[in-house]
Length: 165
Image 1: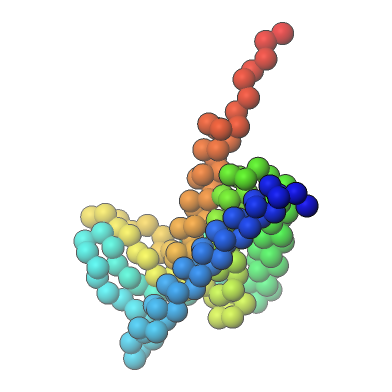
Image 2: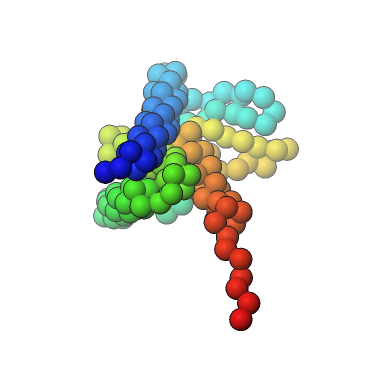
């Protein structure tokens, strides 16, 4: 393995570990401030609240279900997608590899929760004039940033000029 490829993997691994660690610390902090009735609900400012919900679905609570079979299916699907992302991160250029590792770091944070708690703690509640977005967590932020950066990389960095015949 060449130095360039090893360097790319090391940098990507550092991004993955930082994302995973920040996500774990944020969730541990929130879970440690649970009040006696098992809820975290406090007002930060007019746009941000911390409100703990347990997500059994995938990103932003989509496909939440009480069915164990459904939950297990999506957990296995997430594991397979993580393996594909890791494979792509190894194959891609350095910048795209870093973006994929951001996604993987966030995804592994949520996967850890799915396996350990049987649900993902989401707690960031953003609203404008009472209109609330989906409640999410730090891992979701890294996943979203990684996806947006991959899209911009495809559009602006890797676009190839159209060849005229």
